[in-house]
Length: 91
Image 1 (cartoon, rainbow, N blue to C red):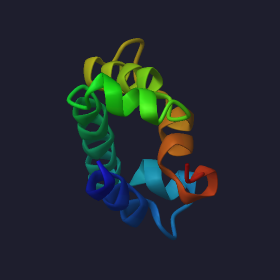
Image 2: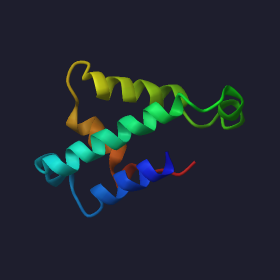
Image 3: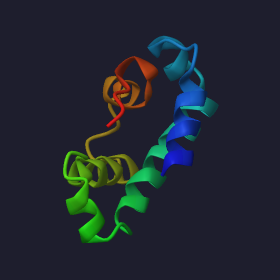
């Protein structure tokens, strides 16, 4: 999960939202890595999740589901705020 997150941050570094949305390769790679983070969460044992209750595990999984299935389309604002360094808050 950390490697996927690091990729997302590297892809979006030095970009603004307009540049991010305009670059389909970066957009697609970012989307894919966020999906992989969400998929990886499902393999974390419940004991580990409970030990780190401050991490929004369900929200990560729900975000993955929305991205991979494209429920109601993918909102560029949400994808950008999820993946940009400007909103990155370490746990």
